[in-house]
Every structure is written in structure tokens, then in C-alpha cells.
Image (cartoon, rainbow over all chains, first blue to last red; front, side):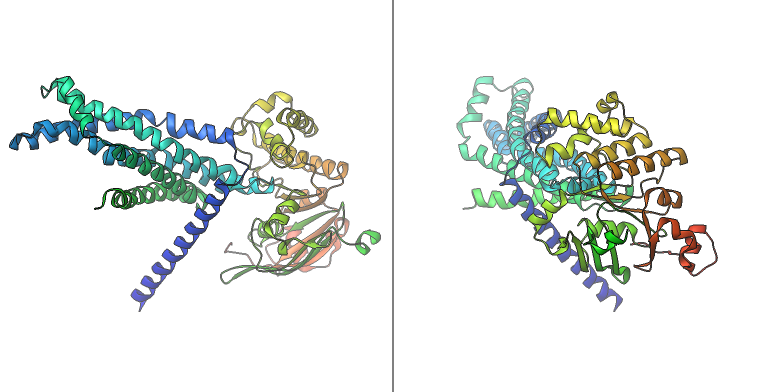
Length: 257
Length: 262
């Protein structure tokens, strides 16, 4: 009986959390499309999310592109298909690895910091103070972060794509002995607009999810240091899982035949 | 005093209830506060003093009851009108709740800029005036909340609260965490601001020295209701055993120790 009660409690808890998240998302979206927008705060978040995430995204995609070229060579050389390496690298980076790796890295860096910052503000009553000063916490705290996530992730991914392809090029030309010109030609011959666009759409969705999860878990943070710590963990884990799920759904949407 | 109570009270709380599961924190609380009156609600830890302020200010939804400001029930107002009503309120939080990411000057000017749409430069000038009123030097304005002492943070928070010239101000444990001298200074500042700006004030505290300094009237909250209220001067002769036990800090008496908290 206790076992059934525990299942019921968990299920009800899940439904309540889903409802809370749906309401939070609805309110956030409604505030995103209604003035006023705090442009100064949006600018600050763009710098935080976009500019300061560049090194980590750049390094991740650089080495991923390099590894991808090496691994592809190992496999493709077994049936004399080395010429496809450049194409594999560019398609993998633009369609999948660029957006997913950038999304996961930014989720770890930014999602955690958003949850920690807003959670601390919640615990120290700064969120309540905003309300008493006639300022909507959604408008002031959530909207700038969510908009900055949606705007900056595609730029990060675009730069990450370029760096990742460059990583593949470095390995291809310097280590695997490809001709620089023919490697670049192979890179661009099979690249279509949709490959890049699908990656950028994914990036925008991931940016939204990362910021939404960071803000949601921070906003509903429990009391004390433990509550903020849990909010931070939940923000990163939930954003990462949602990134992987939505990645499949968007891929299905763009490329399913 | 008789004229005040005969007139429509500035704040009229009727039948306010709030529960957390089976824990009934407020159970039909009634309280009237006249215009420009300063009422202090005393009570032990966990008796629902903070919940009272949060439900009255709309930071927490009440289960039932009415909170009338100038005869208008704020709890039944639609969200937009309730927000407009919030412009008339100020709340001094227990720990100040200054925004960490803003300088002290930006904190004090925050309500002027965001709620009253006053240009930033002008808001800063007004903020400097209010900082001077609470004894903060202009150079403190450039510092961040993490760089100043607890007493200075409390002063800055008080300046932020009154800078928007609210009609009604709620003070949540204004002297908690302060040494007796700083507590006395903050109390005097509160009294000065309340009198100078004709503010209607509701303070919650368990610090009796502070309650005596701030309040025109004191009310005691116990078991979710106001069990006694009267002029500050009469609290020592209230004849109420709960009040007697509380203000004298006696272990023996009718008050049961609250071991759970909402």
C-alpha cells in the first residue's frame, strides 16, 4: 500500500511541477512580447551568455571537429572513402554537434549561474522586493535572460560551426595529408543552406530552454543554501535533457522523409 | 485618537486566514490601522507575523478574508489594479533585500526609475536626498550592498522604501540582526520618516524595545489572531496573561512554544 502511495505521490508531484512550468512558460512568453523590455539588462545578458561563452564553445567545437576528422579517417579509410571526411565533418558539425555541444556547454555555464543568481535573490527576498517596487520579476529577471538565450545561442553555434570545421581542416590537412583546396571544396560542395539553418533553429530553441530552465528553477528555489544548490543542479539537468529531446524532435521535423 | 478610530481606517483587515496544509497560521485575523498611525504587531517566532505582512502586501495569497485600503479590498482586485495599489505601499524587508547587482544609489533610486518613470539623473538626485535623511553619505551611493555594513544596508533599504513616498509602509523586523545602538538609530529613523511623511505604518517585531519606540499602538498576534491591542503606554498594564508573558520574556505562562514554522 505504501508503495502505491509513493507512486501516486510521485505522479501527482510530477503533474504539479509540469503545471507550474507550463504556467511559468506562458507568463514568460506573454511578457516577452509585451513592452516594456529592459534593453540595458538584455544587453548585459547578451554579453554574459554570448560573449563570455565564446571560449568554452570555441574550444569544445574545435576539438570535436578535430576528433571527428580523425575518427572518420579511421573508419572511412577501411573502404577507401577518405574523400568523404570533409563532408562528414561539416554536416555533423552544422546539423548536430555544433548546436548540441554548444547547448550543453552553455547549459552548464549559464543555466547554473541563472538558477543560482535568481535562487539567491528569491532566498534573500530580492524577488519580493522587486514586486513591492512595482516591478515584475518576470520582466526584470526572466525576459532579458530568455531573449538573450534565444538571440545569442545561434551566433555562438554559427561561430562554433566555423571553428569545428576549421578543427577538421587542421587535422585533415596537417595530419592526414589532404590537399587544402580539395578539403575545402569537399566541405562546401555538399553543404546545403538547410544544414546550417536547422542547426541555428536548434540553437535558438536550446537557448530558450536553457534560460527558461535556469530562471524557472531559480524562481522556484527552495529555502537556504541547499535549496539554491538543488535549483542549480535541476536547472542544468533539466536543460540538458530537454536539449537532447528537442534535438531529436527538430531533426525529425527538418529531415524526416 | 477617538476621532481616528471613528473615521474610515486606512487599513482594515477582516477575517484574514492563511494555512499551510494543516498548519493554520492566520485564522480570521482582524485589525484596523488609522491614517498616519503606527501600529506594531508583536508575537513570538513562527506565529505568522511575516505571513501577515506578505498576505497584506499581496506577496502571498490569503485563503480568505479582506484587506481594505481606504475602503477598497485589495485582495479581490484584478492583477493590474492590484499592481497600481502596490505603488502606494512600501516594505522594508528584514534583511534589507537590496539588489546585489546594483550600487546603493541605484538601489535607492530603483522605485523612482521603475515605478514612477522618473529620469535616472533626477532619480539619483532624489535618492541622494533620501540617503542624507537616513544618514548615509553621498559616497556610499557608489558602493555595492556587499561592501557596506548591516546597519548601512538597513539605512539604504529604508531610504529605498520611503523614496517613492508610499502612503503605507510595512516594516518587517526592522531591528533584527542589529546591535542595540544601531537598532535604536533605525527605530528613530523610522519614527522620523513616519511622522515627517505622514505614513501609515504596520511593523512586525518581537523586539519589545523597538515596538515601544515605533508604535502608537501595539497588537499581539497569537494562534492566528490578534488577542490584544491597545496604546503603547498601556501594554505593561494590559491585564492579558499572554501579553504579560511575552513582554516580560517569561518561560511560565499560557503561551505554548511554537516548534513548527510555515
